[in-house]
Length: 119
Image 1 (cartoon, rainbow, N blue to C red):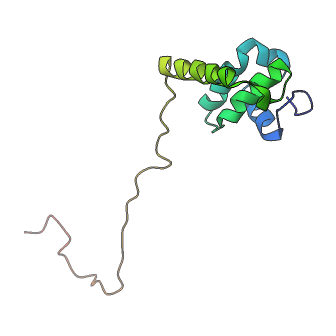
Image 2: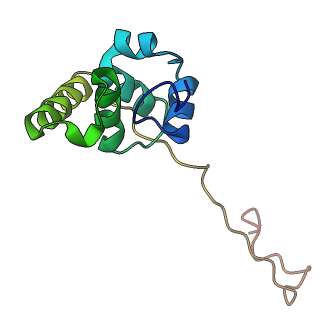
């Protein structure tokens, strides 16, 4: 999906949509604005609500800022209801646990005090 094909959709949003399998206006229409927004969120991207409004504007062929406050609220309520029914997975840790080990030059290699097997 390219920015030229859909109103309100810039290159970054178009890339996100392509990466989740939405490549045409028909794909977007089949899922709806909220469904597409949820799909982007579930893929791990971090879109703002402006993307949700932009998707709806693209489907209605209007600028996203032309959406009325009740329309925006309805979109957010629909999104929240879908997430409540099927919550997004919590992000796991970025990496495994960190184990810190320090080596001092002053440590004596003959020192056996660290060995738990010594009596």
